[in-house]
Length: 364
Image 1 (tube, rainbow, N blue to C red):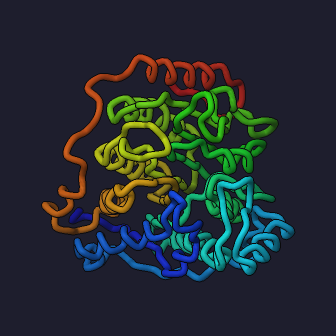
Image 2: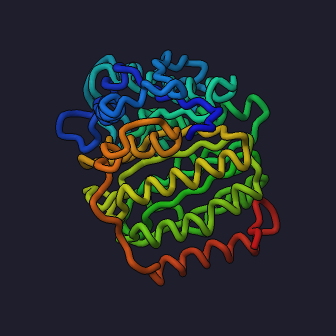
C-alpha cells in the first residue's frame, strides 16, 4: 500500500435514488448510498489516492451506443407517466425512473472517462451493472445496459474489452450485445438450472461469427460455496484474460450470490468477494496497466453495502481502520472442499475452450 502509484474513484450521485422500482420491490435504490456511508465511516476518503466523484447524467447519444431511439423515448414517456412496467413485470415504472437510470449510466461512463484519461486506474460505480437490458427493451430490473454502453465507449477508442460478470444471474443482455464481436471477451459466472432466470448461460453459448469463442459461461449449481467458486474462478479467469490481453477490464460485481440473498441460492460469503476482488485487481495490473472499471449489479439482502465496501477497499487498497474493516466481513467462510459438480462444470468449460478453433483458446 505504501508504494501505490494509482488512484481509485468512487462514483455516486443522489440522483441514483430515482432508480426506484417501488416500495415492495426487492431491489432497493439506496444500496450505493449505504456503501458510501460505510466508506465515509471508515475515513476511506481521507486517503489521497481515493477520489469521490459525482457524475453527469448520460446523454441520449451515449445511450444510443447500445439502445434504440424508440426504446429511449418509451422509457421517457413511461417515466413521466409514473406507472406501468417496462418489460413483462420485473421492471416496474415509478415517476422519474428515467432520470435515475441515465444518472447511473452516466456514472459508468464517467468511470470509463476517468480511466481513459489516466486520472485513475480503478473506477467504481456500484450504481451500474444493469446487464439484462437489451437494445430495445428492459429486462430483469434493468432499464439501460450501462455495462455494454461502457464497453462500446472503450471500443470506439480502439480498445479491446474484457467483461467479467459475477452476478448470480447470467449476464444475458451484455452477452447478446457482443455475441458476434471479437474485440469483447465476456465471461459470466452464474447460477444455472431449470426454471432459474434468465435460463441462458450454458457452456455451449460461445459466440457466433467473428465472436465465436469470445463468450465464456460458467454455469454453477445451486449452493456453490466460497471454496468451490474461487476454485472455478482461478481456473478460468486468469488464463483467459492473459490470453486475450484486453486494454481494459469491466467487472459486473453483483453480490446476489451471497448465502443470505433471497433470490439466487448460491452460498458465497464476503470472503469470496474479497478474494475475487484481489484476483481481478492483480489481473488488471498484469494485463492492462490496472485499467479496471467495477460496476454493481444484483444484491437483495442487508449484506450488499458492506460487500461492496469490502470490494472497494480491497481493490483501491485504501487506508482505513483495519479492525473496523474486518468487522464488515461475515464471521465465517463457506465450503471445506471443492464440490465435484463444480469441478465437472470447470472441466466442461475447459473442454469447450480446448476444442474451439477460433476465439480465445484455453492455455494449459
